[in-house]
Each structure stands twice: as C-alpha cells, then as structure tokens.
Length: 477
Image 1 (cartoon, helix red, strand yellow):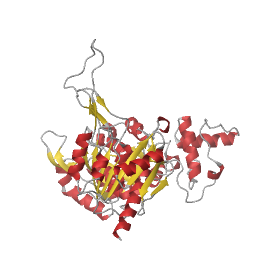
Image 2 (cartoon, rainbow, N blue to C red):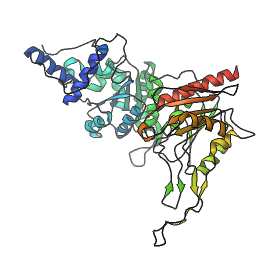
Image 3 (cartoon, rainbow, N blue to C red):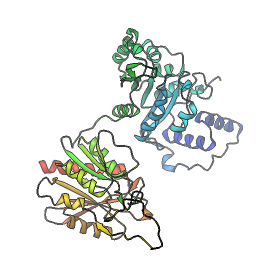
Image 4 (tube, one colour):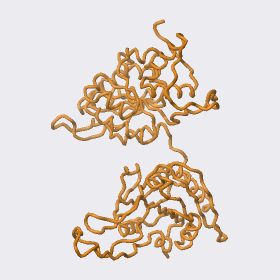
C-alpha cells in the first residue's frame, strides 16, 4: 500500500492524537504511522504522560466542538516577496484574535523567511513541499485546503494569483488553493508596474468573479529604491481584521449610535523624574470592554494609563500618565451615553514631586507630602450637566468585597458597580481571568447583586456589554 488516507475521525480522537504527537515531539502523521506499526506488532507504546480525555469525551456527538482549540483555523500561505517578512507579524495578529494558524511557505517565500520562524510563531509545523512523505501519506494538500475555516494568502504575489486564476497546481500552495472549499482571502503585494499590468488586472478580476476576497494593496514606497505607488501589502493588522470579519461576520450591533467612554489601566504619579506611585493593573479588563463595546457597534473612547497592550482596533485611545491627565481626557470626551471606569487610579500623589532625582542623604528619608488625587468616578457621577445616563464603576477589593462595593455605589453616586476580588491569591491583577459581581441600583433604591462565574476577561467584557445593551434597550422602550 503506497499511502493511507484516514477520514471522518471524531474530534476527540483528533485531540488525543495531537496531544500524543506533541508529547513525543512528532507530527500527527508520524504518530499515526507509529501507532499503526505498534498495533500490527502487538506492542502499543504508552503515550507520554499526556492528559487523558474523560470517558464522556471518548465518543463525542457528531457536532461536538474541537476540545483542543474551539477557535477558527486559518491556513496561511506565505508567497515569495519582500513583504513575506510581514507574514510573521500577521501570524501573531491572527493568534491575538484567537485563531489557530498553520503556515504553508512557497519555495520563493523561503528565500525571505524560514519555516522555523513561522513554526515558532504559529506553534505548528510548517508545510513547504507538495511531495513531502511526512504529510502526503493522507493527501496532506487536501487536508490543508479543507481542514480549516479560512485560507489567507499573504503576500499574494502576481505569480500565485496567475496560477489561481488559471487553475494551476504545480506546488503545494497552488494545489491547496485549487482544492479549497473554504473562503480565501488574498493580500496582494508586488511592484506597482506588476500590479497595473493588464495580465495581473485580468487575473484579479477573474478571482473576484470567482468569489475570492482581497485586502489591499496599499499605496506607498516600495522595496526598490525610488519606487512608489500602489502595491504594498496591507498591514498585518488590516489583514487580521479582514480575516476576522470573514470568520466572525458582524452581528447585530445593539449599541450602534451610542458613545461609550471607558478608562483602563493604572496611573503613574511622579515622585521625581524617575520614580512614581502606581499599582499592578494591567489594563486588560478595560481594553477587553472597549473591544466588546466596539463590536457591539458603539463609538468608543478609551482613556488609558500606561499599559503594555496594543490599542483595540477601531477604538479612539487617549494615552495618559497621571490621574489628573486622565480626568482631563475624560471630561474632554464628554458627552457620552455610557461611561465605564475600569481604571485603577492611584488614590494619592506626592504634593512636592521633585524636579530632579531624589538622592539618599545623611539627613534621612526625604519628606514626601501626600495629597488626594481627583476622584474621577465620583466627579463624573455628580455632574449636574453632561452626566452620562449610565455610569459604571469598578470596585477592586481585597476584603469584604460586597459590603465595600455597596458603600462605593452609594458614595460615588454611580449607577452600577463591577466588584472583583484582587487579592494576590486570585491572580486577577495582570491575569487573564476574572470573577466579578455586578451591583445595580434598582428603581426602588435597593441594590441587586448578580454574581458571575469565573470567566476570561474577554468573556466578562462581552457579558457586561450585553447587560448594558439590554439596559439601553429597556430604557428606550
């Protein structure tokens, strides 16, 4: 038997194969060969201390989700052009959006980037050869074409697009594209003269008629000295956003037409030019809320303290350092329909911050006089004019969580409080998960408490935005 094709494997079996292969440092294809060989010889090898699937997962239903990822899968074909280096950043941008990425490199692409680099970023084996015995034993090019949700070609060179338009399949990339039954997104990149050549224009027009999606190319300087025009590959973030729109089509936008104002992150209060007072806030929860509000159709203004996060796509971000700067940007962003204050603002600052670095001296410790920072949540909640109709604060506590949150709800005069325990043992500060309680003031003056289970911060954000959307709908009814 020259080759063997295995079809219609249950998702749980696929998951077990991936775990076993990863533990043994082999590809899935090689792992299958070894398992079959061991079975024939009557001595199955024990899998390396990989977690076993529970009995309930041994026979999943036909429509059960992939227990390993549960996320969209993208086959990324990297063409041969100088823009291939941007494909490495594209891998990261796709994974940031919770997509599983497998890479295929053309022979020309390998002149610019290596399979090792792409594999390290995607955490997957890279594919380069149509006649690779390690993957073609089960018609690997067909699997790569169909065992995904989207195929992205970046950069899509003139040669690759010509092959697609004419139905050629003389290498792994073109064979995958010809065998594909999934959506395809092209990010063309080439010299402006090549892009404007009638042959290229005909090929692109044919591909568009065939239902192929494109993004770019953009205008700008080329790699060649003195060359400029339309032909630059779209930026990785643009391509990732376009891929996400295909994989996750826009849903109903319940906050369309609303302006949502959000604060996030810590503030840094200077002691001197090199030292400051701050806290451990990462800004992840506030940034997740901003992204969720944007996805719900809102116009979003995010005022952020110093964080190590990329700005959410489509969101107006104002970067600040101190509490006073944050308050000024919040006031400048009014009016707003909803204000969410997720920032962990420093309560105090040094009144007499030094203009030069403070030095140790025989005279003892420097005299630092502390004064209170402005209370941004209370200030906005008490505005006589331009107060947002819905003001939401956050209560980060280490003890007596609900009692302290109720006190804050009353004292700050906001409408809702999102309370969370930030004790070191919870790992909330800087982590990716959160456990929150939503306190809302009812019409009769009572406080309703809704306790949510442990969620990722993205899930908390989506749930909170959903509650806000329901509130807005009820208020306008």
